Image (tube, rainbow, N blue to C red; front, side, top):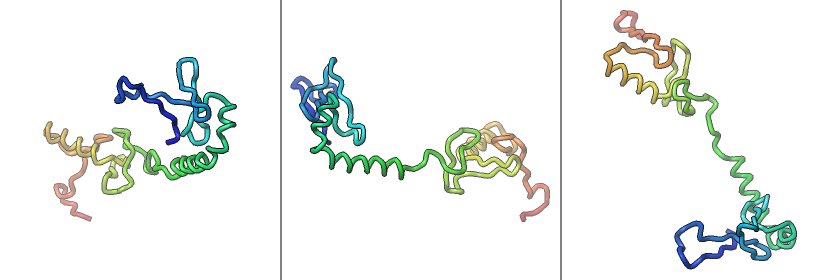
Length: 150
């Protein structure tokens, strides 16, 4: 990284022992001097606009390279959720893999397998018939009704 760091001799393990300095003039960040990050790359810090202007020729190539990397990271980052939305019970994003969720025929809700499993455990523990984890509509067991499998 391009930060200029000064280590104190007391305790090298603590993060508070590292002081940030202006990349142009070397002024350390103390209570009365607040350093500002380079707005494009966030790699170096400056004590003022003049120091940033003075240091620009040395920093320009690295800055453009890091700014492009940051732009690519934002552009190609995985989305927070899928196009399927979230499970209506636990509100966690549904997996893109269709084998990890169940479409309930009674209410047409897509339920994550975790909520389906938790519902099955609850039903076994309380000796209940199998119901939909969302609407609690009882599932029809086709073999008991004699309808046959389609």
